[in-house]
Length: 110
Length: 115
Image (cartoon, rainbow over all chains, first blue to last red; front, side, top):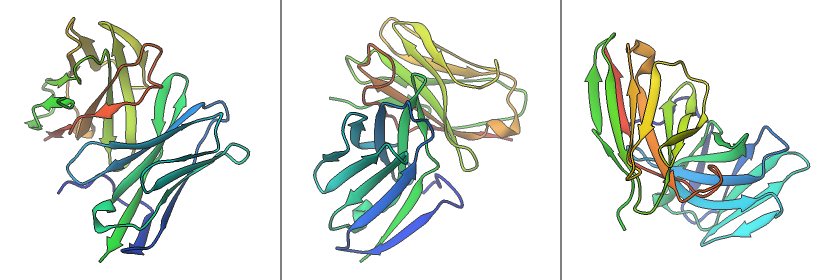
């Protein structure tokens, strides 16, 4: 498949573990944040979003936490599965555009 | 409902040529954004169109341009191609009436290789 990024931070976990992917965003004025998952050869796929008036939001097996004090975003994946292996990007709205982080590669071993 | 489609999926061009990429958004979506993805720079915003008008623009040279048609389909054009333009070009669509703060849904991308 096509590589979506080289020299990305990598998180390696075992199947069934909980995974935590972190992201530092750049602008304290950002008001909307999204996590995307990108598998090799595919476009980014929406996972979960959160607005700045919240500090936590849960989805199916995923939770996003927002800490505005330190401009930090995290994505927690419960019971990680091999199918979760991908590159994960956080994105923030900044000056009416989405700005993406560099991404983290998640590798899940059976 | 069909997702965002992009054509062609792969393209090989030589330096100096120009290229046009096409994007069909999800039915009902009026906003289309374009991004360039490279290993070194990651995902970078090119521009966003809404109702046939460019609403936002990223920090790319004028060789990169786009347009949107009345059916919300969009094209982007790159003129005088350079080796550094080799990248995955992604299109994303959303309902958005107020800017790209609504969820954007991405297509599979067009892989452009410039030789």
